[in-house]
Image 1 (cartoon, rainbow, N blue to C red):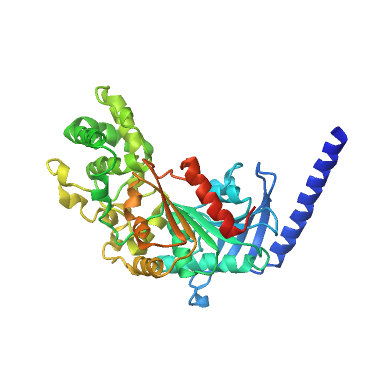
Image 2 (image 1 turned 45 degrees about the vertical axis):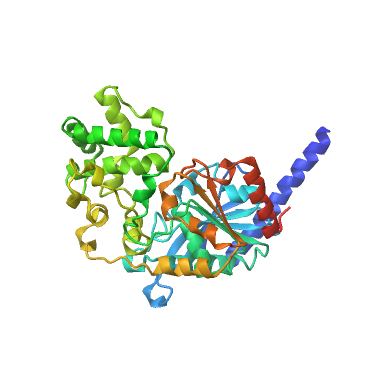
Length: 430
């Protein structure tokens, strides 16, 4: 037995070594790959590489120059299906983690092609020109990568992403319908405006009235006792070195408003809300629930803020219940005032992407599986309305009581099996 096991281990290592040579030969032959390096992961069934893929800053004008987009390849086999992960932000977590594995890639035993979003983290041109930070240009990035790698990975392809990455998966399918066979967006919004308008009423219906009242009561406590907590808030921001485009008093109010959204987004527990505890305990809970760094000038989300203002969109807050404590004028149009420099104040949101994707999903029936959480505020701007359109191939699954953490694995066993059966049929995977 020992000898047989040793022989098997040697054969496996030899196979991985051969695969590595084949992959490196492939990467060396792709002109758009300007460099690559092997990286170590605990997943020994794949060979992982970090590579730089040369992209056009402006796909419509090559004279605008190029930038290098970070991509991670997890090679399982040229005969395996391939999953392109349409990350919506920077990809440090995936490149640096020893345990990275996207759910769909694991379920399909597939190759991974993880793509960092343009103008985030290390996928930035030397001179950052925000006019080129558009959904359309970003989708061209994914198209260029898929087009190149499909020359080598000739099996079925799927795209997947989470949150903004899930939206990206959805956008990618609309802009380039034939690039992949299957799309699986997780908790993906499709916003129609900078302040979409659907989230406020959605949050007034989440869970039970008792739960909603507990959240509202905590928000009111933080506003009624603002004079007590404001010095603690100022001291915390000073200690952390946070700076803001508006007074910290306004930031405090925004954190109180954000608390409701954050609570439901991450599936927090009402039983954890402090009621009669000490001021320090209440304040610590408040800060942990809605960190003011989110609204600071140096929060590493400038790229997202620019895109939100231009064509991705975002959400607003319901100030009506708090008018006794908060001036609605301080909150109206908050996003441009708080998240970006003053020069963005006149930027008009372009809803072309919203209309384009909505029309595509209305008029077509691509193979797609959407995952949402029932009480996740982002579901308010999702595409659950597609369930009423009698689509054969578009499937919408909403986890009961679920949050932004909704995944295939968080669904019931019956739903998980239904999804797997559909994936196996579509991806021809066994």
